[in-house]
Image 1 (cartoon, rainbow, N blue to C red):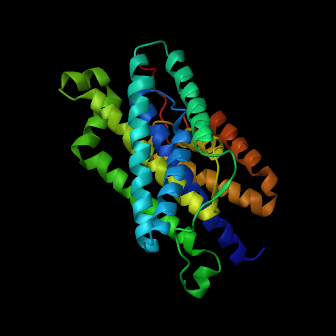
Image 2 (cartoon, rainbow, N blue to C red):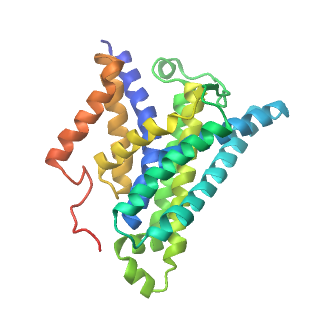
Length: 302
């Protein structure tokens, strides 16, 4: 296989991995702060995609230009998904914060099932054609041979988003409060940090990122249905564990490794076995690095 095909697989893996990373960030941020695996996060991704579909369809009928439709659809999906994330944290997780660890886990699984069936009843079980929000544009000949316009836009948007999140976590007041809460929630309370607001903000940010991922991948694939959240959630959770759950750089690294593994497995073996290679890689890494690639083994918090 020539170098062009190799580069095509590489960029395809990066595109797929960047979407996994966006969703995995929500998993790892929530786990890092409250030690909860939010299994409803994949459904937030799905709700974001459906919200973008509804917004884009309405704006298209109203005659808005494509750039405005894309920007407003992103805004609508992010805000609506963030509202769901905020509500889920308040209703399903906060009352169980001091309950046995199994209780919030069951609540998260129940919320995932509820949201999937809620959208199923409110929308349709069928696949829907998602509008093309990223119009084709000319690329240099060498770049066009290995990378499509949609792939390039997805990579640029996810890169900017991840850099913005890194800046928020490291340099803003909210980011410092998040890091303090993740390190020691009791001490953060003693220092005057409103832990409840910090946790709610974490769910809001993670949900908005998942919605952005849902819009981007739906625009890339061209269709959506109520089941897309399940497999995307499982893959993103795998990416978070692979990189080290609780580590933001780990979630990004895990997403890219998972995406590249699937792309090369599909290209050199068969697309039927890409999941086998991805999960086999996870098992191998966890055998030698139980905390993930960038994760740190630490005593369980009480």
